[in-house]
Amino acid sequence: MIDPSLIVSCSASTACSLAHAIIMSVLIFATLMGGFAYTTWLERRLVSRFQHRVGPNRVGPAGLLQPVADGIKLIFKEDFIPAEADKAIYLLAPILKAVPALIVLAVVPLGPPILIPWFDGLWYQVPLGIADVNVGVLWLLAITSIGTYGVVLAGWSSGNKYSMLGGLRSSAQMISYELSMGLSMLVPVMIVGSLSIADIINGQTAPPIVGWYLWQNPLAAAVLMIAMLAEVNRSPFDMPEAESELVGGYHTEYSGMKFALFFAAEYIGMIAISAIAASMFFGGYHWPLPATWAPIFGPVNMFIKIVLFLSGMVWIRATLPRIRYDRLMAFGWKVMFPLALLALAWTAVVLVVADMAEDPLVYQLVAGLVMGVVALFLLIWTWRRSQRSAAPLDVTDSRNSVGWAIVHAIGAIVAAPFAVYDWLMAHRGGFSGLWDVTRREEAARRAARAAAAAAAAAEAEAPTDTDNAE
Image (cartoon, rainbow, N blue to C red):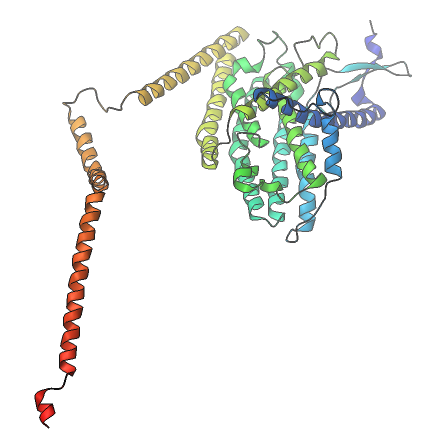
């Protein structure tokens, strides 16, 4: 056992704080860059399995060196700048996209603090994260939205209309889904009463799995994961780079390492949102291994959850097609935003009732009751929609009512032009023949009139007998 008097917090020492910030920054940067490279390998292998293909298997064992080969190819690929581009912003845009993806995890702890002995005889308690600020959730919201500026500026500065459309789509998509993401993030904040990510993770420690905020508000967790998927422009929300419509979207005019920065930002963003979702609703670095017993298990737990989330995102890409842009916007405003408000109200009601009862057991019971009510409502709503789609729509059960007569009378009036149109289309052959006969008769009449006029003109110009006598 370690004497508690020998344990010193790293934040209390200036040298330890500086060394900790530098070392953790380097480790997280290297991990994210390596994670980006091998997330591409993971996606290609999983998609190949979904599509009954082999996937990368030539470069290295099981294709493990394929990301290295891709990196070398991008380094030596021809790099150019379009003639119509705004050069300064064109070069700055990939950096604006990549840097926020790299620094967003600065406030997410990857494990509990560890004790490190030093030569001065003290044990320093070092957190497994760069910073533990008390406004970590605000940091996440701010940094995740900055990456959109890189996309918009890349599309605008390229001098390409397709790229410009991709940038505008990204900005509209960010506004639509950022609201839902922020509201869903407020749910664990309300439960814990803190904006610190570490406090949110530590609030999900006991009991294991059951204590996760996922079970207290699964609706908020679902909204958060869908909104974050839209934030990083992953399928089926990859409208800013829709190759079938926009050639390649905002990065159409980029090549070489500038394109690689956009590519890296997307995959690093996938890793980041996986870590955020795991921290907010899935217990963070707690479970499946006991991180409280051995702090080194914390990063292992986060790694397992991040890989599972990444696999889920790849699965979604291999399953769902890209949705239409207007439907994407309608889904964000008409579905996601109301559901996020419902999830927020759900947690608010539960917390108010629990505060009035002042009993943790009442909180769990009320949370479960509200979740059951919401689930029942969604089931009934889904069932009613399926019944309406399966059976013909009828206003009332009785055909003798006044409402039935009024509705069907209006329907008959509205349907009359369509019935006439259908009848005309059904007999268009006869009408076309009749029209041809009419046209021939009219042409004959015109020809007769023209001949009569010509004869009259010739008769008027011909010399008469009186003229000859003279």
